[in-house]
Image 1 (cartoon, rainbow, N blue to C red):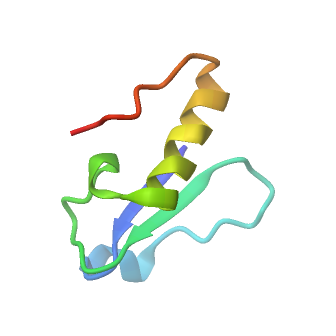
Image 2: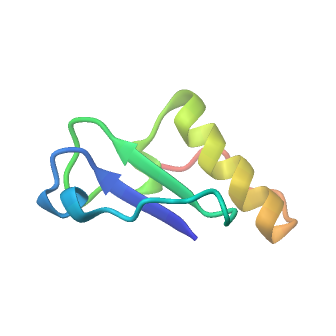
Length: 66
């Protein structure tokens, strides 16, 4: 599971806290809100998400998401 939150989203105050006992990923986008999606991340953060998807799905993941 990938949990995506926007830092200024009121729902992020009750965001899931990962304990390390799962390979789930929690990503929080600064300055973003409830509409945050994978395509909104950049650089290393986006790479981290896409690398996880590629590993979990065992398929090549397109890197040019728009």
